[in-house]
Amino acid sequence: MRRWNGWGDDSIRLALPETALALLEKRVGTPLPFADTPLETVMAAVPSGRLTKHPLIDASPQTRVRDFKRLTWAAENDWKWAALPIERRMLPQLAAPATIIGEVTPQAARECGISAGTPLVAAAADKACEVLGSGCTQTGTACLTMPSIAASIAGCMGAYARSMNPFARSRATPR
Image (cartoon, rainbow, N blue to C red):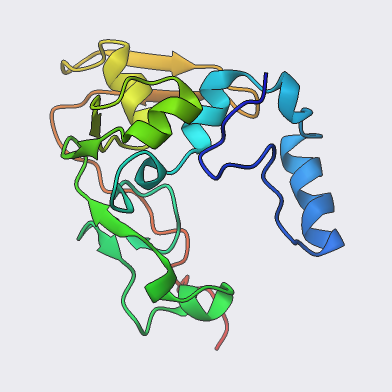
């Protein structure tokens, strides 16, 4: 059976430099042949905009060109645009997490097996959804996850803890 990936292809192919491919294989491992890839992995990679009439995706901070505080794409003058070979106009509209962004179209239903008209809700980052789904919603609870690359621990605290900006310039950096 041909597995649907949201783009109508049998596989996703990106033209990456050999150095980038080597780095990805080192960090993530050798990719599975498409036929062996679990359906939930494929569905997680499908842009929700391919299932609905309009290209929309959630505004969670999974992609580094997003401004996660404002739930928008990064500002036009942000360094990230210069670092990536894409333009803002090429990207879909963002929707706040938990927003209904449309319904599965008849064509998408035929191709992927999800019933036409099924409401599609913008989600959030996979770990955020995993933590909430595990029941980690009360102060003092924690969730330990064991993904394929690294373990992570998330907890529910009584106050917001600001994370460290990994791109902030250190005071010890020579100028």
